[in-house]
Length: 223
Length: 131
Image (cartoon, rainbow over all chains, first blue to last red; front, top):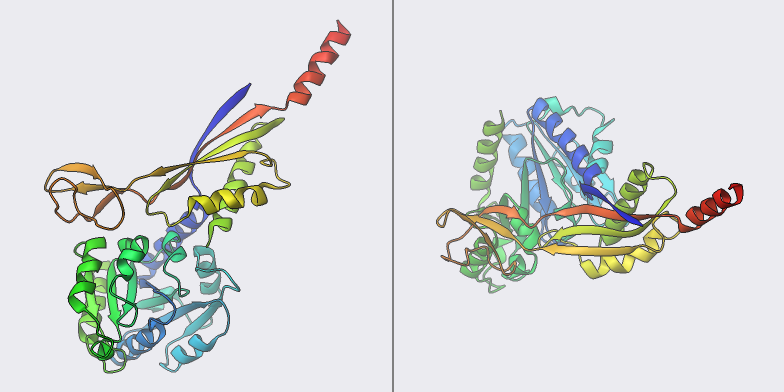
């Protein structure tokens, strides 16, 4: 005799519950949280360095959590912006999850959610697994560099489809890379119709104005 | 890449629920996985034996039902099923769709249990012996 037990529950229920809790805390603190996701080597860190620096220069209160399998190199690079930065080492795990965020927010000296305007989470470089894990973020940003191939969104539809904004990085070398801009924009739109797309260069600062204006706009919506 | 941790979460959840059903063993576990859930079904199945070893789920089958992406098309005012995940356009009118209604599921639907046969049999013999 066998019986069926209906469970109907999310496999990542624990992560989702924790993420809901985090989302409520971010809202209570009035902080806009962004989760940056891309392949390794897209230039997430350089983009974030520039973003932190420019936001700070405008008087915004910013902080960043940065995920990597090993090393605190990125945290040290980002800390040069003067913003509080905390490294999360996953030791082999290919994504950040809500529990890691929760744990690293706790006991982060000098950082209170209520004292921030923006919190950036730089995910582990990976275009597959981070898409399953909600970190409670307000905005998920998918980044793509001009060196990666215009079909990245078609190859990784899961991630691009779950993103709220897309950033193309390294636009300063688009030409030598023979980057087909129209094709890239079309592919992003094919997977996530209507998404906001920012074409940027962390080196020259091109496109940063539009990106920062978007952040301010989104932040004011939350407030 | 993260299929082993997904499977480990399934084993944990089913084991917890199993506390309400003593003296049973798990025969089958059924999952629902959306086409946009970014997990590979083959890898889930591959990890299953390993993840269930030494747990109350050891020896059980894993059955995965995959769900296609369903979008709401505003032009057609209808929910439409996409054939793949390469183009988020309505298959009827070719308009881009951004309102996702199905496809990110990663759920445990149910599990099937059976009373431990050995116990049943032993119990029956005991009653017979007493009679």
